[in-house]
Length: 322
Image (tube, rainbow, N blue to C red; front, side, top):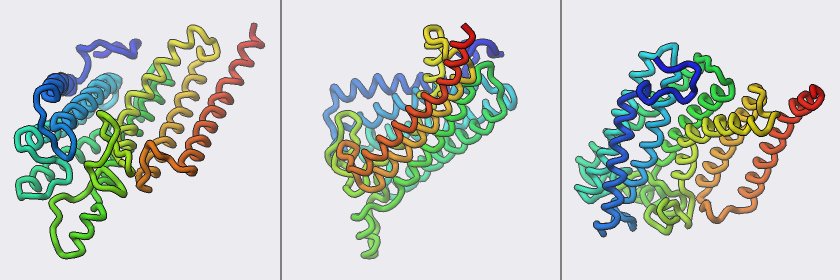
């Protein structure tokens, strides 16, 4: 049993299949770093080991967070265990197929329709991704029925998993044909790839170092990345507020920290929507236009104002009590 009074709980109570998945991702991360050093092969203008590296880090962090999150499930614990296990199997299979395709077959994974084998592998990957999405949704539902000692952490877990679910959903937008693929389809042909990360430009163009996000057009990987890692950001914020409460009495009230977390959740959702809107317009993250900057400024102003309003009444109460 997890310690109900300790939000960190013991590692032994964490979801074991997810912890194993995180360990495997750690091994893959180390192998990918060695591959980047000693294997000079490239694919779509990027080192073949770069995508396995990025996926190993992202999936490893996500798996550990989900494993910890499931320790807080009291009602429906058995169902939660199965949700986590199916998630681990689906995502683990997907990452394994990335390695098979890119490292051993020397071809791309996502959107690859070049051969029947590539189509079959893509279908399996899609199945794993949909399974992970559904399992995350199921965990969100479970969390709605849990009562945790800290209300701010409860809100952070619910908002974080909801945002992760939305971030996974953004990936669905990638499975639309690019202009070049559409031209082939309109001509009655079958393009070797179907779908793309980039919007307004073809995949494989200039991008940010390591991340690879397009600097020439929109890139749906950005909101996808931001969304799924809301699962780490908001719980970390809740813990950070708990630590800051030792220094700032206004944060010692559980209700104040919960308000701040909820405002941060709304702001994070706004950021996710803004990044998705920017990418869908074919606009690079490094070249925002006036409307993107205006929307970002308005979002920051609204969040800052809401936080100021949320903490001010409690500050007045604390001062009057002295």
